[in-house]
Structures are given as structure tokens and as C-alpha cells.
Length: 198
Image (cartoon, rainbow, N blue to C red):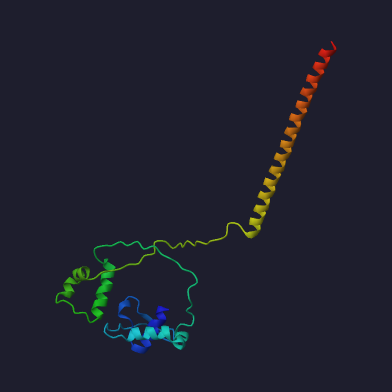
């Protein structure tokens, strides 16, 4: 999407955002030609107006960004900042080339001391992907509605079965106690009758 905004900005203004100087390659509309666009002056707000127009005008959006859709997933990256004292040597050469191609005023001893000037006056930012693996967390129900009814029915049947067994055991215990009491009473009566007969 940003490349399309740069393309529209270049088409309207002849330049692109000065804050994206490291990514200013633009594909010309209707062609496959890639060019390095000039950077707009910071006081010129043409690139901002072009970006706002493409975002707020449906016809321009459909023309320059017809394949741009809203995101359906969100990927969050953990930022781990680190720092070094100065840009590395390859980036220092890149910065030297950029500074010399712009209208930034250069010191008189630039040709001999450009490396120390770059290291003392410019900051390099590298964005490095720590890992190419993306973890996707999905939420799913642990049990379905059918499993809920099945569990409720199973638990209910289990406890009803236990209760029925407990009642039967209680009835059996009462029966055994009454039976032993009857036998004990009968024996006691028989002993008394034998004593009385003797």
C-alpha cells in the first residue's frame, strides 16, 4: 500500500516523502519500470496531500490500491532494542552517498573526514527480524454441547446408581439386624421354656 502511495505522490508532485529516503523506489503507473524518485523538500507538503487524497478518495483508492484489503489477522512483534556507537562501515558509505546527493551543507574537510562526520552526526537504524517463525494462538471450546449433555447424563446416572445401591445395602443391613434379633429372641424364649419344663 505504501508503494502505491509513493507512486501517487510521485505522479502528482514529482517527488516522494523525504522521511523514506532509504525506500524511494517507485514503479511508474501502467508500466513495470522502477525508478529512484527524488525526495520532496520537508517544507513542501505535496506528498502529505497526495497520501491523504489516496486514502480518502474512493476512485483514487480503487485505481492505485484495488488489491489492498483490510487485514484479517494481526501479527505482533516483540521489539528488542539495542544500540551501537555509530553506523557500520557499509552503512557509512551508503549515508555518504545519500548526503552528497542532497542539499545538506557539507563541511570544508568532507572529502578527508567524511567517515568521522558520518559517525558523529548520523544515526543508523536497523530493523532485524529475530525469528521467521510466527506463533498463532487459537481459541477453541474444550468440550462441545453434546459432550456437556453426555457428561451431565453420565454423572447423573452414576450418582443415581450409587444412591440406589446405598439404599439396597441399607435395607439389607436392617433386614440382617432384624433377623439376628429375632433369632436371639427365639433362643432366649426357648431357653426359658426348657428351664420351666425341667
